[in-house]
Length: 186
Image (cartoon, rainbow, N blue to C red; front, side, top):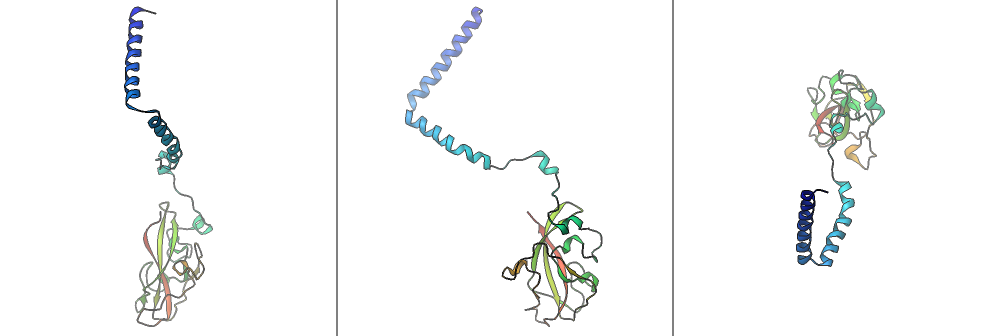
């Protein structure tokens, strides 16, 4: 060992010893044990913290249901249109309305049921509010029965078997159903 290396090593040893003696003079054994115990107890919680993964941002979610696997985003007059994953009834698009508008002469129900549908065009899932249009006889042009996420009637907010025309102020006669995008599903 060279004399300069020996001198540097001893200087590092003296500095380390000085710092450790200062710490030892200001803390007790209990204090050190408390901090070490707290770190050991908190260490498993670090596994629960959110982690940003680079590949997670680029990966598209996979369709999670048979309907989502065959859904399409081009023809809103077909029952396999992506917004119709939980619709049960006549399509307003075939009765003179739109995917989110009632046909002329009908009124939208004040309440709706919801579904979460996968859009194959952009790879995202969206919350869809299904609203019945009421006031005229059924048009019966295109009738669909899709049941993704359908819940029993004791969970009415996700049950597509209920006629939601009560409270419209007009006739409670069912005409068709719309499928309006509410927002992205998380």
